[in-house]
Length: 223
Length: 304
Image (tube, rainbow over all chains, first blue to last red; front, top):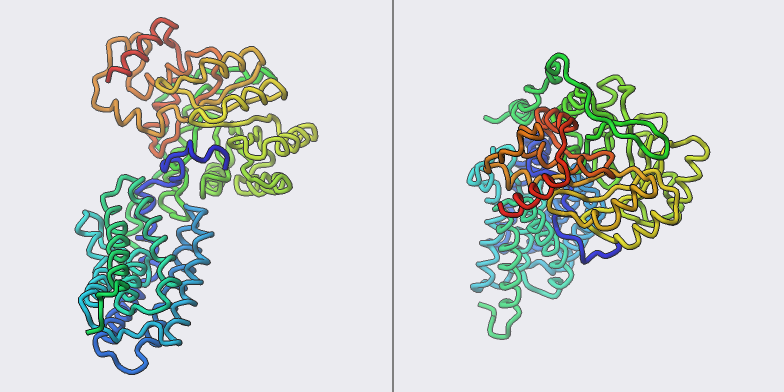
């Protein structure tokens, strides 16, 4: 694109807020009651982390990997791309993130064996991803437009980042860029639409980055 | 218990309210028409843009709403509908609406080619044609001068073969005006499309006079600055001079300002509302402001 610096964020906004939120309504209607299953899988992830059963990282990687691939295929590729052609280029990244999560889980990279303050805060971030559907009624939208973990990308990315904070480990540099980039993109999209909710994915991404830095700091020792 | 059925019913509730617009008031006068200099063909001076407003994906209820807007547009005497491959699902939504409306003969189809690949231009135009469901486009423009040299060659060849009727180029928000001017001077363009409104008036300096001199039709995009102007002015009282030009709303004031420029052929406001599309087309009517009043209008809006 020539003279790209002359473009404003508004120049890239292809749809109205009304169309955007109705997209979630239609997506939820099409998938219902799958949302109950994806939310339950999120609770299972939290329980696996809390109980630290042997091999829990493998299961977490598998669950998150499947959910990322499903969100990429079902939401980005088949739904969002209908109003935003750029989603076609983002969807494969979600597939890649799914593969990376599964691989990290299988190799022990998602084992949440440390229990320190940042780890607990990471779990809080996971919980906020699971509670994300509450935003819809809180911001005056109908429940059917709620963004649900494992179905919509924002809560999926937030919960995944929370898990990565809790897990730590050498896979973080590979696993964090895609969810962080997505939350930045989503926040900017919402901001351009004039939606107050823009603050949520941006704040979640900022919090995750801060916790990841804290987690890697030398003073953050295992409990 | 929320059932799938309830979900779907709620999600499509808006669609239940959809109906084709009630017939326009009897004896609606035909909108003012302007001649395309290269052919002499006359087209109504207000068209229909589809940027954002027609990008509704496969949302059946919203597609029907867009069809209602198109129906009202044609009922009011409008003809030119403008779109682009860049506008998400706008093309298939237009095609859907045209099919529902029985492919109105009045349609003047204005499309764009938007790809950085010179070799892909013809293929993209063919894909766009299928999405619209038209036999051929009336006008195809090179969108924002992207790969313009190769695409213009393709478009002029297609025109020579009778596969489209008019060739044009576009820009928006004041970008690349120097190159735009150079292309206007070097090529026999039928149309140019550019941004021009009561606050964005850079085109008055060189491009609009050049279009008049070269006999090039001008399509004006962003007449309301993507709705920002109408939103800003919505709560301001209409000045007394609005009645002098027969404007009943700020949207009509803004459109009449644009249409009063002698080089302008068509303005293409986008809307998703039936009442607004009627209001927009109705702005294409005398009286239009003279040069002195246009200056007063611009000065007044600057103060708000």
